[in-house]
Image (cartoon, rainbow, N blue to C red; front, side, top):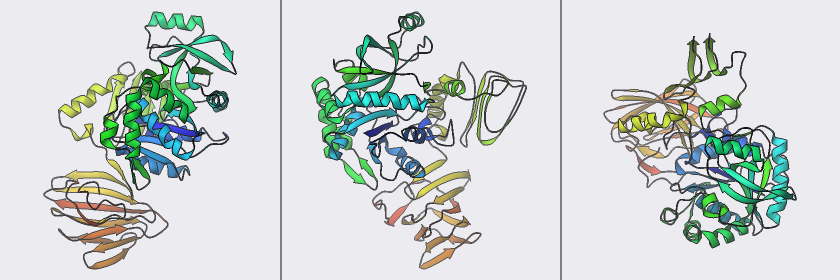
Length: 474
């Protein structure tokens, strides 16, 4: 069984919402692990489990790779979507990739932004679905509803089950309150979870029958894909030519070969901060507190302090989220409308609408911790054994100070070994390089100065990641 993790750039996101910033699945929102990591870790204990296929946006490739390494997933297949085309093309690409591994591959398709508390019940549902997939069925997981929710689509199932699964009679769009209540009373309607299981061959064959244009485009995108470090880049032109459709619309709603396995495991699609508030443990005042927080006379409030201390006094029913980039404050009933704020940031050409302070690179990451007129300060984290490109800047000089670890520095004609507290100055137009030859992490503070500090002011002469032809992204 191959887990396929949909971790792309589409779908509802928490603050911040920019395409280039971290969607919720890459954040540690409910535990010390990120939601992507939790999605993979909750599969532990299942038999015949292969390394995952993870589908993500190109902009998030390095954070996905690093988060896999942190939980000892050493050989994932990471497919890079050149553009978002919804779930049908993404899943088709994973299926075609899985066929290269084995013609009999069975895929367990999961979203990286779901919360499932009862893992044992989840595993039982997977075992039932696996047997159905072996029989050539397209399996979807339906959540046993706990209320007349109007935020989810529904699946109408047959009354009688076979082998723990039910024939799907109809997929229903998000209903109004009255209709949702009637679904709850009838008892054979389940929430549509967006999780699936099927043989790769079955998926490709049936999708070819009902949405052949998607399969034609994706086959070409996979055939023309290119290996880039630990990633597989789907061909951009071919993938863009595919219609943008969900797997439900492209296949599940059309096929008569779909069964549903019911799942009662305290599941939630974490699509907003209020959803996180509902899931998480609360104190005696109904508050969810994360980070360094002092809350006085505060009730029924979600507070997440990931950067600074937050203090509240005499408030209730709020969402308060502090990040290195921005602080978000909203009432519980308005928190899902954050997208309007992001659109305002973009229309005002504010950096906060597009950029994130922390940026992942193949060698590690950097955090832009300060900037002003003619200067910028960054914290660079270089992973063991990694190396930045041999490069030069036309418009800025740099000063490097080692905070921890041992740095091997090329500075013009010199090669220096610098330890904690030592530094070097790199003048304008000087060829330089930073390397970590040790098995410990290296952190330095980089102070840039000059009239122009853009990321495109770099000329590469050598690069172990094959980026010599690129002019951006250090």
